[in-house]
Every structure is written in C-alpha cells, then in structure tokens.
Length: 264
Ligand SMILES: [Ca+2]
Ligand SMILES: [Ca+2]
Ligand SMILES: [Ca+2]
Image (cartoon, rainbow, N blue to C red):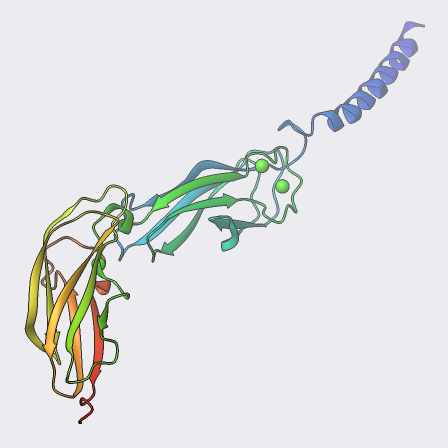
C-alpha cells in the first residue's frame, strides 16, 4: 500500500519545512523578506535654493518609502540641526508595503553659519524594521552670509573721552567690518557717512579695501561741542553700492551727551 506511506512522508516533510521556515525567520530579520516594514529615504534630504539669500526660506524635501513586505504604522520623523534634535518634527502616516510619501519642512535662516541637518525616520524607534540602518539622511546648508559680503558697523564703535565736556575735543572710533565668509570677495572703495541729529553729511570717507573677516577702525574727529545731547548715526555703504544681502546691520547710533565744562 504505497499511497498512505507517501502521504505520511509528505506530512512529515511539511512539518519539517514549517519548522525550518519559522526558525529561519529569526535569522533573516536584517533582510527585507521577513514580514517586517522598512522605512527608508528613497530620495535623500535636499533643499532649495542651493545658494540662498538672507531673505529666503529654505525648502527641504525627501521621499520616504516602505521597502518592507508589510505595512508600516504611523511614526514620527525628527530633524537634528547642528546636533540638537527636535529642530523640526512631523509624522509619516501609515505606509503600505512598497508605498512612498513625500516629506517637507522649511527653515527661515538667520545668522552667519553653515548648518548640518540630519533627518531621521522612526525617531522614537517604535517600528521594528527589516533595516534600521537606512533611516537617516544628512544635508549641510550654508546661508548667504557666508557667500556674500556683509558690511557692518560694529557695536564696539565708541567715542573718547567717554564723559566729554565742552573743554574736550571729541573723537569717534568707528569700527567698520566685512563679516563675509568663505567665498565672498574683498569689498573695494567702501563709502561711510556720519549724520548728526538726522542731518546727513556731518562726516564721510572711503575705505579703499575691506577683506572678508576683517575690520578697520576709522577715527572721526567731532571737535569741540556745545553742551547737550547729539545723536550720531554712522553708516557703511549707505547707498548700497556694494552687494550686501544683509543691509540691516550697516549702521550704528551713538548718543553722546556733552556736559558744560566746570567753570573756575
Ligand atoms: Ca529602515
Ligand atoms: Ca525602526
Ligand atoms: Ca551688512
């Protein structure tokens, strides 16, 4: 009677195969054929515009894909900027096996720096994935300050003597700066002006050249003043003849009170 023995043999074989397959799944957790979801960044984190101006908002984008063989539940993504997590965060909704979804966030830059952005999927590690090593993408963005001239009048601009009287001749030490960084050029023939109490033309001059990352101190003789309070506005390139994406730091005010000289 061969037939019953074949059935018994096949039943035994199926039992062995079932045992192998359940044992094997433990060893194949790092593969994609393991009944696990797998979130990954099928397009890396990028941003536009590539050379942003100070007034620009950076638009970041990436594409999330579930390359696993079962659906992934909703999960949180996180963006670390310069090592600090939680800079931006959001949710990837439930994602079927094989499905993709776009991911966006925006950044309004303000400051002279390069920033490193690290986007990480399943930031709370709530999903057991076939591959936990493909959840991250890094983008480094430089803002326009580092690629353009940034003329400034420094806040260290001061005057002497510090408590002037009508006996003293007063001198302002204006500190003019080019805070432009890597990639910016030497600013040539940089004009500066000083107004007093809103009236322009109190003093003016030209700095022949101002290299990125350097400053120059220009003494401006005010002379002897009558007693009272005067406001001096010191400005670099007030007519914007030089390309400078950040004109908001191009002037500085000094309010100088002059006391009557002690009589006798
Ligand atoms: Ca993954
Ligand atoms: Ca995970
Ligand atoms: Ca400026």
